[in-house]
Every structure is written in structure tokens, then in C-alpha cells.
Length: 262
View 1 (tube, one colour):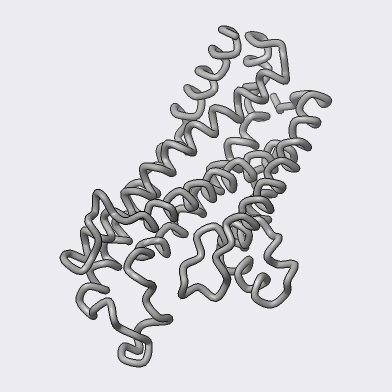
View 2 (cartoon, one colour):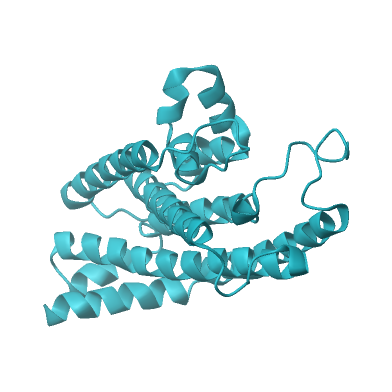
């Protein structure tokens, strides 16, 4: 058990000392809340009762107050997907795995240590970023918004759904990247879905809701979104994708050579 704990700490150190980790943190922890604050200031100026008919600059109707800020959460989803894919694929580069397996010979323990380390890191950054984004949104709304610290029961519920979506999609990207030993594959599969392809397919065909990003969107869909809020369905579908990706990557990890070019 102590050996497994040391392996987890080693993997956490690897992630937190990587350049991609700090770039992702800068994007989601700093840039996303800043964009949310700018949007909140503009909404406060035009009023929360504004509609596309009264204000043509609005693409769609504003959501109820409890749901403000969750559109900005989609910005950070892309960096998290990229982060997961890069971490999964980078395991096979520069002979990192060879060094790790010299210290911990059990590939099963190494694999689960990597997943747990990524889970810890993605949970930490997701909770902090999403709460900060929603909180600063209502701070920017001023007297029109909720208390930026206490928020509301619905806001807290949707923060939880958003965090779950970020975590599962990050781990899914990690699993695909590790399976194919290439960060391009999860990015080609998931990034177009983040950029509205998943939403478009879900609106056009029923099977589109079973794609991972579209299923994740069901977790925190607001009343003004064109799709229904169905966290149970979205969570189950997304979890199946994650289990499938991790299962296949685990099988490949314990069965194949660690690879790596000299």
C-alpha cells in the first residue's frame, strides 16, 4: 500500500511539474473567469430581462438568474480535453514508463496510480475554476446577481454537474490518448464535438446524444438551451465512454511493450 501511495505521489509530481499543467491552469483559472466577468458586466448593462427582440446583439434569450455563468464553463472544457490527451500520450515518450516500472513493477498499480493522479488534479482545477467562474459572474452582475459566495441551491447543483463533466471528459481524453499513444486521436475525436459539432449532431439525430460531449452537455443544460437537462442519462452515457476507454487502454498497457524512441 505504501508503495502504491508513493507511485501516486510520483505521478502527481510528474503532472504538476509539467509545462502543460501550468498552461492549462493559466487558461482555465485565469482566462475563463475573466471572460465570465466581461460577459456579466455587459449583461448588467443591458439588463437581465433583455431578449433577442429588444437587443439584437443577443444570439439567444438570457437564462434565469441561477444559471448565469455556465455558458463560460464551456471555454475551459477544451483545455481540459487537450490536457487529458497530452498526459495520456506523453506517458510513452522519453521512456518515462521504463523509469516508473523500475520503481513499481506492477503495471496494474502504475496504471491506476496514473488515473488517480489525473483524477485528483482534474478535480482540483475543475472545482476551483468553475466555482470561481460562477462566483465572479454574479459579482460582475452586482445587485442584479446572487450572493457570489453563497449563490443558490440550483447554482451549486449545476457547479457539481459541470465539475463532473470536466472530470469525465478529461479522463476520457486521457484514456484515448494512452490507448493510441498519440494526443492527436482524442483531440480529433473530442475537440470538434466541443466546438458545437456534438450539439449539432444531437439536435439533428437521436444517436448524437450518445456522443461523449453531447452527453456531457445534458448534465448542465440550462432552460434556454436547445436540449433537455437530463443529468442521469448524460452521466451514464459519459461514464460508459470513460469505462470503455480506460478498459481498452488498461488492456493495451499491461499487454504491450512500453515503447518510446531513442
